[in-house]
Image 1: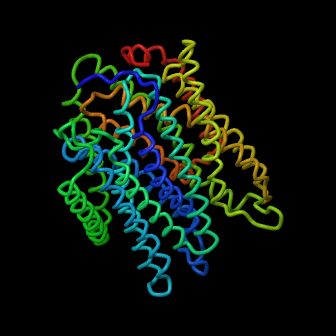
Image 2 (image 1 turned 90 degrees about the vertical axis):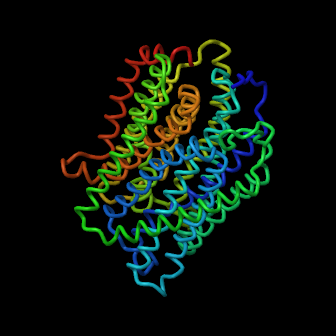
Length: 497
């Protein structure tokens, strides 16, 4: 493959992918803002009346699996379809999943609670599968536009990350506000429409992607998918939707012992399959050394996201139950607190993007492991602040909203040290023919972090540990450990910054 020269400006395709990802994140974050609140809302309020532990468990399973299925989507992309077709499939499937969630609310007078909950689970299952096809592949296409050592690459991923958070802001405000204040169904419906708009935008602007992301062995002169490609997309999308519904329906009839066995076998199969694919596709000491760095940083990534993803779980419930949300006689929706993160992204991403380029020119740009360590230090500080907020609310008092604002802002600064840098790192360090699969591995670290985020509270209660101080100490210890081993990781990256 011809080496890509360093860029003086960002390609038009970056902004096409920026807007596509923006609409997908509008859809996802609008839905995520509503998830635990919808599940814990009383039947009178058109919810399901689940208790805190049950709602957080569903949140844990869902947010964990949406980052696990990208392993499958990455493999399908690398071996069969290419990134572009796989992104389209994922977008269409996710739109249908959102419409199922909306139906679970709109049909509250026509269906029993159990039937509505089944419909809701169907929607979540379809979203999980669709996300797996969409998520790793759009990030991979962004990376293909740049040379691995081009400092513009990190800046490009920061711009792309800006689209993620602009979508999160709009989704939380519009879908979250509609769902919490008007009707849950309208929130999920808005999320579904947002995903459809993302697919339409990508199709309209597809020529700006040049030849990147097309199916394997496609001629370089081709820059758009044709009718044959679209027939494949439709067939895959319908098959995934129907297959997910059949799987979930059949799952309900299985004994618990069989479900447990299938779950363990499934996880083992994913780990073995992923390990085999990476083993076969990685060669030479340089590639293996870089792969080791990815795996080590993925472990630290789990620690950070186990804390960060309290945002849609315990933080959301804290905003609802323990925070004074009255402003000039109007009660602000609890979902809107999640937008602090996105607003902070909009403020700080341009600053970080300029900062990395300036530091690079001065020769002061920290290596990736150092940036990860700084992110964990900021995360530990955020949970120290959250511990103080929880203590202030322990007597049943409603605390100032500025506690949550401060926590979200600190976590955002930590996030900017890890997330866009991590996406860029994968496209630099992974073997060229395995980029999407390794991106799936990276998403699996998010899966583990998200799952732990939802399950930690119930686990720690059994041992009389407080959630927020525990996360603070684990993040602090991880930051120190990563700082200590960073010289070894820098050497193992074999010349990649």
